[in-house]
Image (cartoon, rainbow, N blue to C red; front, side, top):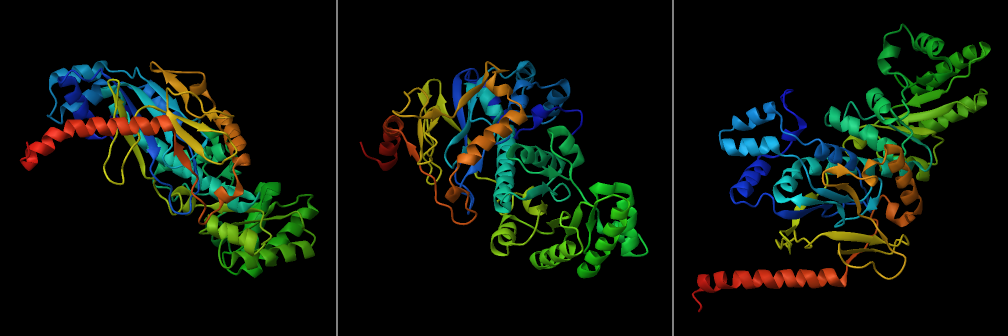
Length: 462
């Protein structure tokens, strides 16, 4: 992207063409509501962790097409000067209702809804989908790795394999949101308040004449923070050399932190390392593993092998959200100019009208309702909160990342274990309210009445 342009141009061309068409038809200022949700969870995912809202709100709050942006649009040679003037004066004046970041959500549930002039709300589609899709996927995958580790440390090692620097930075943010132990990404750790974490690379060992010399040099520099990578050549031999250096450092009053395993049968090597460290009087030295890990291999090491591992460094599968590199997320109009609307394409149907989502936190099922209907009877809590009003953040919309992390922890701790299952979790029920069903039927009847003359004419009936 040209460095002179602003984030306002992070949108698909059709957002601009539709905005101009709305303007020409004097429709641009008519009120509309758009709903952003995920149609279905990826296979083996029983839930989603809503994330990305903070970046979406910042983009909306700062939406402004600069002279450089307008010049870029003019170069397309498909828009009149009047549209460029209109675009230059545009600011987001609408409102947003959303589930707070860190909320556990399920397929078909709105992550956010945008209310505002139709052209403004339309222009937001691309950026909102980009950020909510990416970060919700990353946060969910990170939480799955955390669950698999069973209380052991999980560290983000994914920057080098993430699909771009932005994704790597957003993963560091999501790691903070869902409570991972740290990140190797120094910039991300600094920006988002995650613990910086790292050991050493094989190249450091290879650069020295022998492995022991490499370990000794590293330990002399980093002292108590030292974690030695022991599998550059022969893992068993590397463990023995790490123990030798640990003894030398102990004589100086320094206790090394641990060793890292990055290849081979990680479970078997972890048992070997733990046995030898304990035998030689180093029971507090930790064992950290990495190398092609995902939530499934972590779960096997913890629950099946019972391997004595203290922490996991997860790279590729975390940065690319494992087996679900993206989500089937959509941003659909649900009302226009006071009229509820819905899409009826087979397999892509939507519910009409602005929504509210209700949960009783007994995790028996959520209720998807119209936004203006009363609360269900019982102890139900509305999940969609007003986070932006008239283009400005509300108090709820200004929650910090630390607040969002605490919110996630409260949701995560109560989420039933069967919904956290990494394989074949049950599908959580999201039930439409009676009023929403009636509204849907009404919208369909109205659509059928509008379509009837067209069908009659096309079939020659009359």
